[in-house]
Amino acid sequence: MLRRRGDAVSLIEAGVCRLDKTQPLAARLAALEGDISSVLEEHRPEVVAVESLYAHYRHPRTAIMMGHARGVILLAAAKLGIESRDYAATQVKRHLTGNGRATKAQMQRAIQGTLGLAEPPQPADVADAVAVAMCCAADLRKRRPAEVLG
Image (cartoon, rainbow, N blue to C red):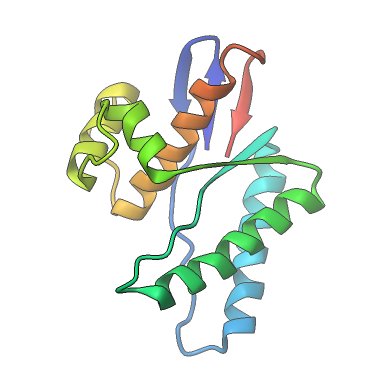
């Protein structure tokens, strides 16, 4: 979660939802929905930003699983009347580093520097989520006053 005031962006919260891999998919998605809904209800963002899906031919199962999770996130936001936006990974990378093919380490350093963090965000999934939120904040900067972004 980010808060934007004018051109300034600050990190409110970032983390990972840990799901029990021994549970059936439906149970894991229900747990994810509960976790995401709790965060959204607590912070009440005006916008939820997610990364666009793409399928790498070597890892189609990953894309399918991410599609399930992304759908749950979008549904949780919609149920609370929260706008959602999606951004391509290359767009996010280009926004933060100027390079649409930046490495995870480059992204983590860019986030660290931009937000003034003592350490790069970890794990890489958290950095990815923060980067998407930062791209969204920049995208909305010209159109909206201060707000909380997820």
